Structure formats: structure tokens, C-alpha cells
Length: 303
Image (cartoon, rainbow, N blue to C red; front, side, top):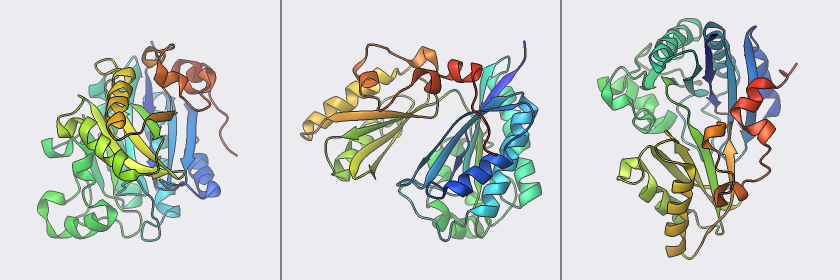
């Protein structure tokens, strides 16, 4: 059985289409399929999903990180999503014929090459973390680019795992990891009040003793309050459970979830066809958004 690994790099550019297309073009490597990509201007962030043979996917991710470092200047970049780097996160995910432990090795290899080729320091996170306090991405991102620029030079505990001691002056640092399949799910509330979204996010995220495996941020997106949610283990915590909890908490604030969207892809096993959360999804096309369908019919690479 051929090994298939997925990589879902997030880049700190969501406004300039030509920059994102240039990054995608740099990622075009033989044996790698482009499954999904999108941009969010409010977050000033783009999301890319690739999959294929492990060594080729690693090379594709490295090339993407290098092009992002060339094109994105974080001293001039701002958005509502936290970030520490031009190529902010680069997670490797086992799909078939490969283990999470092997993905850790791929992450370590990619991180070393990102530093060696482009002088962008790297922090390892999730399963690839070399220290327990860096398993959680929020800890790595503390202070964002601006804070980390100072802290990495002054505090030994904040120095990168590879490279440094300081971070790249314009491209920051890259968080490279290995993890299980993550469902990235946004919920829009019937309210413009971001304080409500932030209050709900605090209550549901696992770090606040909320729902296991859930990370959440309250943001303003497209003029509405948005919950940006990552579900780290959809088998242990189905999306419907998260939606139910958000609905209950929103009712206390006299609001309700009215629309949702999946960022990137979602496995067939995570879909709950008759659920309210799926009925609320904006423009959900199963052929385009379900992992198994997209693996069978990948996108064309931008020229």
C-alpha cells in the first residue's frame, strides 16, 4: 500500500491573490496533489491542503515556506488571526499507509531544511514537539511575531528548536508539527459583538477545561462575530457536540449560530449528514470539501 501524507500549511497572506498563487506555484512538486486552498482577508491568512508521497510532500512544504518567507513581510502584515511566521504553521497528517510517528520524522526533516535553506527558525509542535510546553501551539504563538521577536533573543525558554536564537526579521518563525486529522470549523453568530464570540470560545476550548480536543478563538469576520474552531479528534469529539455546546452558550447571550463553514477538507467519517451544523454550512460541496472525494479528483496547480 502506498503511503499518503497530508500537509496543511497556513500562510500569513489573505489579501494578495498573486502572492498566494506564487506560493502555490512554488509548491508544485512531482507526486504531490493540490487538494484545497482558500484565502481569508479578515484573518489575512491562506490555507492550503496538499497530499501525496511523503518525501515529495515534505519538499513541497519546504518550498512553500521558502516562497512565503520571500514574499511576506510580517512587519507590514496585520490580521485578526494570531501568527508568528510568514509560513505560520506546517502540520503533517497521516492519511494512509503511514503512522503519526513517521509524520513526526517528516516534520523534523522539514523543519531542519526550512532553517538550512531559508534561515527561518522553526518551533516543533503537537506530536513533533521536542518539549512538553510546545505541544500546544498557543504556547508557541504567545506574543505573536512582535512579542516573539524580542522574547526569542532575551529568554532561553522562547528560543526556536532549530535556528535562532532570534527569529527572521521579516518572515518570523515557522511552527512545524505532526498531528491527527483536524476539522477546522467556523461558526458565525447572529451578532456583531466579538466579545460574545470570545466569551464562548473561552468556555468551549480544552485549555479552559471545556471540550476535549477543542481550540477556539473569537474573531470579527465579514462584519460578524465568528468562532474559529479546531477540533483535534473528531471521533472523540464530533462536530455536532461542539455545535450543540456553542448553541447553548450563545442562547445565554441572546444570540445563535446562523452559518458555518469548513476550512480546508473534512473526512467522510466526520460528516453528520442530517445534522444542524451541516445544514448551516455555506456552499458546502461534497465533491470539493470531502477528503476522499478530493483525493480522487485533485485540483489543478496554478500556472
